Length: 153
Image 1 (cartoon, rainbow, N blue to C red):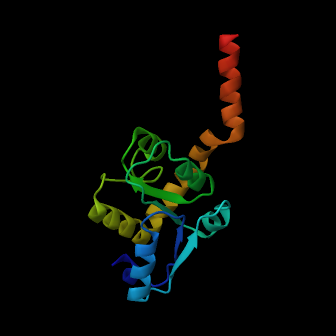
Image 2: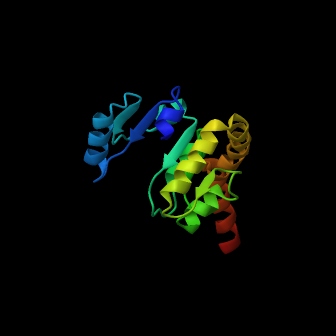
């Protein structure tokens, strides 16, 4: 289990959903004190600021705004390769984040464990994601809209 392999790591579960009661019961039953349930919050940035890795567990995701937010905060995202939106943000794999085989929990656990074990890989990806995050900044988006309007008008 990843939890046991990394005794110095903390795990924060942010958000809600139908699986939350089952997850809480599992954590309580197994007595896993380094897992904290935050619940739904409108202010995710304090958790990004504490994080090295952002795990998106959705097996279906559209654009993946939270992945872009994580990158902007310098946090390495890992997610299932489940849509063009996710792929567009994280590809190529191992450069802007980690893409996991769709619906493959064993691959997810393996990729996450590799990322947690390998500080040089984390450093390399962090160096890549910070410049890429500028692609999603308000300034960049406004400039793109401005250029689009200039070509239309």
